[in-house]
Image 1 (cartoon, rainbow, N blue to C red):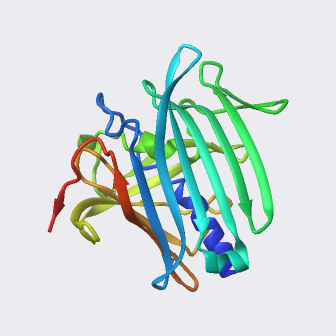
Image 2 (image 1 turned 60 degrees about the vertical axis):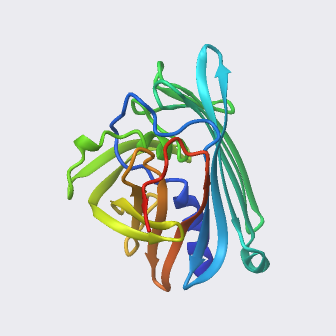
Length: 254
């Protein structure tokens, strides 16, 4: 059961959208890199990273090529080895995915997916199949970067926001609750953060009994700083370990 929760946490780490609003100037750019230490009860169980690798042309559309990776630590490889890679090609203007690639190896279970999005048609394509999608649907990785473009003036504490997602051949809408602001102590210093909670949805990614919280820097970067989820055995945390080439200086107080 514990190994299953670790596996799901890696999935959730790349699936943490916040709200639906956009800014004229994006808070991220090519080269941005962040890595996270994933721990349970103070023990390191794995790492995760996010990297905006390059900007390319897909047809006539400019896109960010973004890669997310998750892996278990060497000791936990003995019990349940995780090597997950997620890639999204994100329209730099409309902040929605053009293509999504998922290549996972979880305890010997391997799965590869590739989705091509046609937002004009309202369809997503894979293999010989197509499926209707919601307007401006995100994939599980693009959702994070889409969320980072929110307009802070539109946020109200204790209010929920909604993001359309297409994942595992299914449409749904994730509800996110803006909780409060918090001074979060990190290895870099104290960072003022906005705190959010995805509302649990039975039969979806989140299940009853779990509580997940997300910390985003309250500055021009809207950078992911921490993720925490409570399970029956304790708390799993992903904390920012390293960051490079962020667009603006991170607002830190010592």
